[in-house]
Length: 200
Image (cartoon, rainbow, N blue to C red; front, side, top):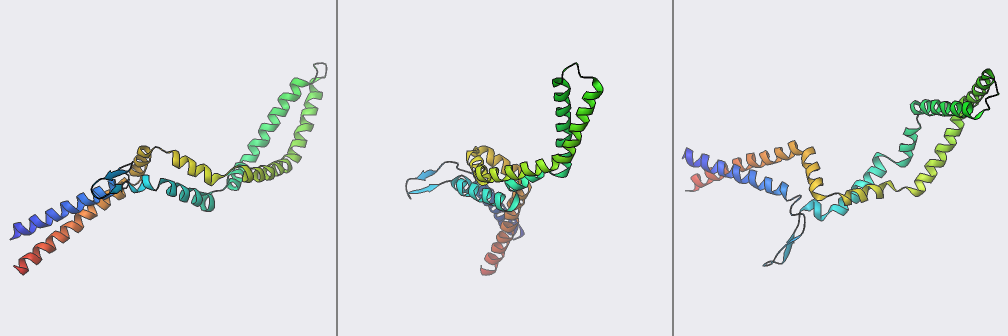
């Protein structure tokens, strides 16, 4: 009797594990619709069949909830980056000033001119950057559709590559689903064995 119970429990575990494994694979496979002639149905993996809907949803969520063009521009021109921008402007101004002024002008006058320009840059750079940022944000908001960019990129994704990425990210969780199927199958198999024994 114990052998019978163990046999049915392990058969149930095997069936539970196998069906969950197949179900996970059928999220991605078959990539192209496969027609079953006798019943007239087409079978295709859930993700390949709904790739466009998934891409649209991800694009919308990213654009609405996670990041926007405004966020990207503001992050690029944040205080930590402004210092670098101003420093780069000063270096360029110094290079241009020293190379453009005639050689007849004494070096100390060139230094005075460079210092004066640097003072102007220090005083005006933040105002100019703010104006540029505002202009870039308005133009980017008009011309760049972040949602559409993400949607197009996901739609262009090779389905095999997409499957590989999802499986690599969620491999542990998907394995847990397979094991859970085995555990549930084991319990059901054991319950069936008990019921059969009680009935017979």
